[in-house]
Length: 135
Image 1 (cartoon, rainbow, N blue to C red):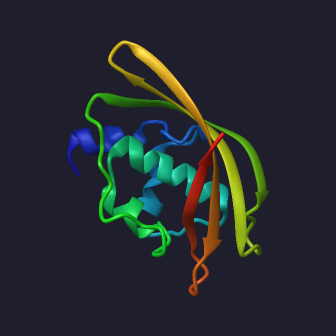
Image 2 (image 1 turned 90 degrees about the horizontal axis):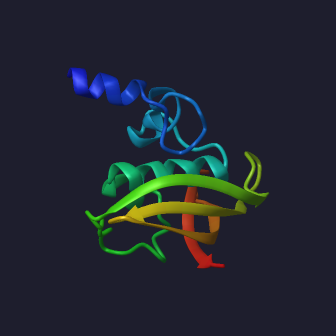
């Protein structure tokens, strides 16, 4: 592991959990673990956007709504994730919704948006992002 990689994994996870990345979203991104709840998947997907992990985003996207690829805007810098509300999406649930606010910066301006995301489990019991509605 390079010094830069070691520093990155010891940093606080971008998802806002307060945990080190290596103990939070990294095991999900590496396929070592799978999200246990819809919120955990939401947080890991946010971190994947921050880190531009297209493969993980596509892998955790429901096939019926998945795009061919994910375009990242190099001028956009993700700043903060706040979970506003959760409905279902627990370990034993089959579906769930997570409403969140994501803040980002483009140039010198800061922006934010609120989305209610829908999640469901696949045949293997793994959480997938289905779609979202901007509020």
